[in-house]
Picture 1: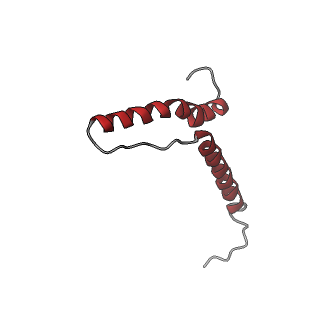
Picture 2 (picture 1 turned 90 degrees about the vertical axis):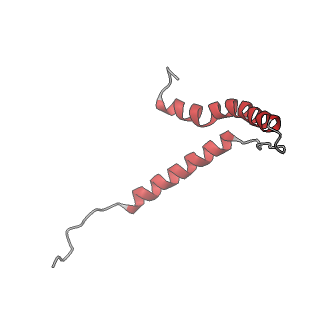
Picture 3 (picture 1 turned 120 degrees about the horizontal axis):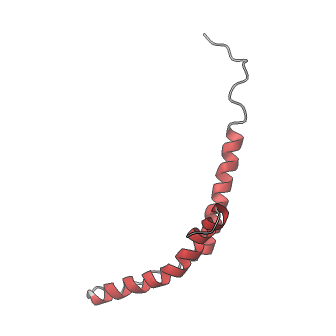
Length: 81
C-alpha cells in the first residue's frame, strides 16, 4: 500500500483490510467445508474496528507501564561489596 504514512497504514492494515477480506474468507471456508461433505462450519463475524481499538489501547497501556517501570537506572547510592 503506497502513499500512506505509518500512522495511516496501521489502521488500514489492522482494521480496514481485514474488514474487507474477512467476509470473502468466511464464505470460501464455509463453501469448501460444505463441498467436502463435512458438517456445517460457519465462522462468526468479527468486528475488526473494535479489535484494532482494543489492541491500540493495550499497546498504549504497556508503553505507559514500561515508561513507569524504568524512571531511573541507577542513582549512585548503592553499596557494592
